[in-house]
Length: 265
Image (cartoon, rainbow, N blue to C red):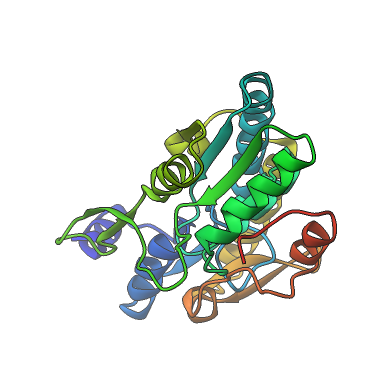
């Protein structure tokens, strides 16, 4: 049906703007003969063939702002605040947003956490006089030896698993094991909208210019990307081949550890 509409409208090219799902479909259409160019846009920042996707920086700013606001009530009421963020199977949003906002504990999909370690870190902070803690939890984070927490399963969807709920699990366990007040905030789709940051506006503009150039030169089946600060292009196969997750030796992760941030290991 899509191909028939493209032929009916006599389109010169289809520019697919999105993340792994959108670009996977774009790649399939390309292999069916549709002239496709891809542009990486996802808050998850999980496309392996580009250093960054636009949308991610804006979502990180939303998370950072939210944590800043939660610090006030957490500190005044001596509470543990659990902030659940998006990101699916990659921890970039939790890592960047958690560090920017000053999260004390950050739980990532890439590092299965121990609940005992989370509890011990809260106790350590309270013993040093910090009566509150901010925990940033990626929706794809899971306790060591346990499965992902799935909010919903949609059978007829290309991506049937809808993650969500791990933040509530963590908050409930803290209250049960420590007997202290823990509150959960799920940022949800607040992360996916609003005013774009200047960084995202500029990156999107650079991507758009590069995509238009590829269309003009009829170099289809490719996605524009950010490579070491410069705009490059890669094949759509490269773009959707593997997800980009947070490596355990990532410099930002190591820097956060050196500052005392716990990752529940």
